[in-house]
Length: 407
Image (cartoon, rainbow, N blue to C red; front, side, top):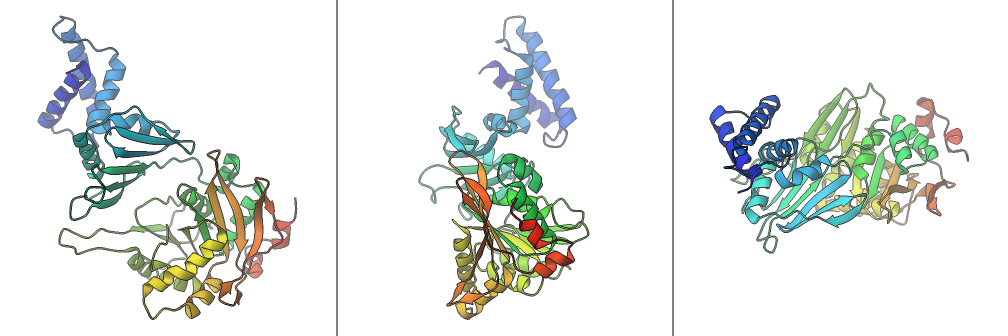
């Protein structure tokens, strides 16, 4: 056993005896660890114990082990690391700048399980043979997803998508190269005017970040209700009610699906509703809410704005046999106003590729669209389309023609 592991073992025993909570008693934990390291360092001077190479490194390693996430903690501390995933104990990957890297971190099967249990401790969620999948949010806002055998072949599969705060407003996205100033001004005006916006893109395209930044343009007096699988949205307003889904209990009862949250949100006096991501039948309830005059936004997995519209016309059919496309298609046309499609480019930069308007017309079961901004030669440029509901822009104090005038 090396020096740091010896100190770690001693600190764990001290924690058990003193009753210190490593997650909450941060100051007391720091004092306890430093005292233990200093005591060990003094004892090692007599030559009976291996010496510590560096006192501060030892303190950090011990604190990471007892209060953090052990060997993974350096990746949590690194602001450039966006995601961490474990395919098997000896294969730990990270994503930095949109690019995947195989790390030198080597874990054990028991070590992976211990880390997952530690991560789930504060969430109230569980993973076991009866519930082999789990989604949870870590205290720092990172999102955890775990799958265990026999769903996976042999090892626990762990994904941690870090909550990296690089943008909280549309202007921040302009600085990152995701949006042009022209497009950002238009989107800010569209949100403030109460248009319904669908944010589309693939995995890691930055949909949630984009939705957060759009939310920053909501007028401050509005009441926003959010519905998510797990808490990810950070709405910078004072009147926000946030809800997340709940897993079933060991008896298989008590599950709260996203569809239920959308229905309940309508009873909470919202000025605007935001759904983290629509994947199934909850899309029908959202469409009905938007069609009744309640402004809202949501994200959806899709490869283009057109595919996002097509998917919104398909997902509500999962709600039941009595729901048909003759109802859904015109409802989508009348409910969605703007589609923003984002993508993770080959250079690791997330960019908005197109902003499309939905004028509300249907031709042969196809929802018509109009390009407002499209990507040409790698740059988001003004197209010739216009958004619907110019009267809403006018009431909010915006001139659509001036907003979209060529720069």
